[in-house]
Image 1 (spheres, one colour):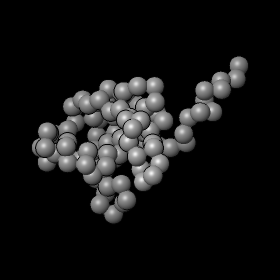
Image 2 (cartoon, helix red, strand yellow):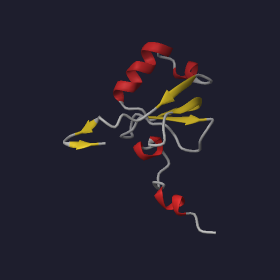
Image 3 (cartoon, helix red, strand yellow):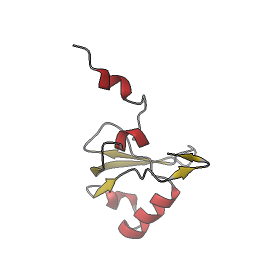
Image 4 (tube, helix red, strand yellow):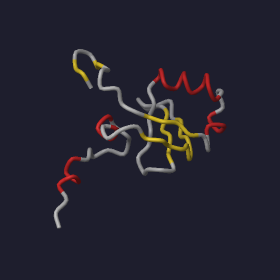
Length: 94
């Protein structure tokens, strides 16, 4: 049996905008990798999915304000990630 929906998935190891088009995702932090030499310095592994969450600078600031600055204290904590269809990246609506 062919599954057309499998052709709609992005080929990526991270959660992307289309992954959230079906609605918000409640996730639990499994582990955190920090590599300041990479463009996306923070990769958060999640219990619920094989894909990692790579929060932008603004979201990392929110996480530090709410959970503190020690990333090890994030492990086991939950959050809801979602897409806002009104957000623009340059001139393009995401």
